[in-house]
Structure formats: structure tokens, C-alpha cells
Length: 438
Image (cartoon, rainbow, N blue to C red):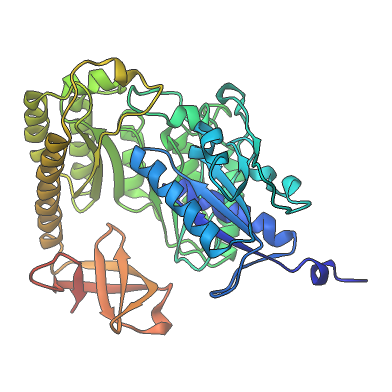
């Protein structure tokens, strides 16, 4: 039998922007191409196909996507350039007009990539395959299989919330997921591939099972029974969907890490109302208090947006004072960016760029203080560290179950293994980069 791969030795390059979900999906696209006899391009080689998976959460994200497209067309001038992802779904014509782009695939079409690669002939005008948002309905299981210690497992896609500042529901469609059985199968495959830690990712993962009659809690229970995984991390989950029952389960689970990433977006109830969020800050505070009651050492990362339309100086100060009182380990601060088609544009009060920058700096400083206090509280404690392959200045790092970054002298034999350590002091005095083992 003739090996067709001999005649189809095509090289592919990939670039991913944005969230963990995008990384998982790029990995799946990569596997599709590998199965079709493509191989990943090596350093210094020119690719035959370049796949750019885009983000569009802010104007800056759009800009980075355009920069990536221009960079790949320069690095691989003869390559067939494919652009997909959220930016491709929201603005396909804008992307198609960029010189060098050959194919634009929307959200529903990204996993049909092989059907569009028969010729690989560059043309003067890009082809667009794109469905309207209301027609986006497919769920494609995805998991990152590469040289990472940490794998990203897609458990859910889409969002039904339509917050006034956000375009993601237009880019991703309605909330949907696979079944628990399908998701467990993906996790089991990750174990075979060598995964020790899996991050559960999606657009709104607490909404898992809406279309299957199952629940996120049921999913956690099923995943916790899989042998071979050291731990799971729950990525961003809405406070109204992070129920006390879920927190109870995590507190007693065998493999679910005491690490939560919870979007607050604003500490002002007035701004939350303008955003049309599904909770109040009081509910948010209750969830954090309950987590800390059951898991005092839990790491809690929180998303906050500054400078949204309607965020007056008084509202920001109110939000700041609320956030300051919460048991937060780290803030992820985002500056509001106006997005076409969102209802936030109907809110009259806008915030100047200078004021947005000031508010962002205030929250970044608060975040640094919160993270420093959290790390200080870990000194002297025993923890389980999963070592990663990254080597820098003869050192390697890993993360504890509660997401403390730990450094130690590089030891190749420890990579992708879990080691019990006693946490020592800070690695440096002027920069919070982690703790060293004693």
C-alpha cells in the first residue's frame, strides 16, 4: 500500500490569541490537520498553511489579530492563510480585505477546515464561510494536546447572557455543551496523552448541561473519579452559577483544586445593573465568604472591568472600597473597550482614556497588595507542586494546588510530576514572582 503522506507532506503553522478555550480549539484543529498528513512547521521552515485563531473581546484584541495576520503573511509569504475565531465571526469582511488572507471561517465552520483545503491555491480575494449567530449550534469537544503540563478541556461553548458591554454571544452563539459521557471521554484521552492537570474551560462553564439535562456539579463529580489526573482547575465561572453545593463538593473532592476564577466585573451594584449582570455584589461576597469558610487557603482570582460607560467617579470609588474588603488573591483588570452593536453604547456617561488608565492603575496596585498578602500567608505551609518544563536561568517552576507559583533548581526528572514541598520565602525582594522550596 502506498503511503499517501509521502505525497502530502504539507507543513502547518498555528497562532492562537485570546482565551484558554481558543487554545483548546486550535489544538483540535491541529489534530485534524495532522490526521490529514500535515505536520507542524519547524523553526526556520516556511509553512504551506497558517491557521490564526482570533479573539475579539476588545479593540486591542482586534488590533493584535490584525498584527498577527500581517506578521504571518510576512513570515510565510506563499502560505495559505486561514483566519478563524471570534474576530472572524464578527468581522469576516474586514479580515478578508487584509492582503494575504485566503480563507475566513466563522464559528460554525472552523472545524470543517479540511473541506476547504483541497487546492491551497492563493487567490486575489479571500473566501468567506460564515453562518449567522442564530444558526451557530454545533458543539465540538476540544482539548489541548501538546507539550504543556496543563491541558485545557473545553466543556461548554456560547453564552445566553448578553451583558451590555460584551460581543461574545454574537461571536460564539447560544450556550451549549456535550454530555458528561463525552466530556469524561475527552479527559480520559488527556490522561493517555500525559496530562496531570486539566483546566475546565468554556465561555460560561457553569451553564454546562443546559441542553443535555445535566449540570456542572454532575460533571465535576464524574471527572473527580477519573484515575491518573492529579487535579482539575475550574476556569472562569459566574458567581450566580457557582452554587454552595458546588463549593461543598470542591472542598471535599479528590482532584478539584481549591482555585477559583470568578468574574465580578464591577464592585458597584449600580454598574452591575448597567452591565445587566445576573448577580449583585452581595451575592458575590457571599460566595467568596463561603469558599474561605470551607477552604481558607483557596486562591480566588477575580475579573474586573474599569471605565465602562456609566461608571462615574463615585461608582468607581464605591466599587474599589467593596473590592478592597474581599478575600481576593488576584485581580485581572481589563479596561473597557467600546464594541459595535452592544447596548452599552446607549449609556450616555463615558469615561476618558486618562481616567480609565488611572482606575486601572489603582486596581493593579490593589491586586499586587492582595497577591503579596496571599503569598505571605503560604510561607511555611506544605503543598503539592506540579513542576513544568519551562527552564529559565537554571530554574524551573510549578504551581501548587492553590496556584502559588514555586521555583526550584531545574531537574528534568521532576517535570510533569507532583512533589510535596514546604514553601519558603519570596524569590526576590523587589518583585513578587513566587516562593522557593525549603
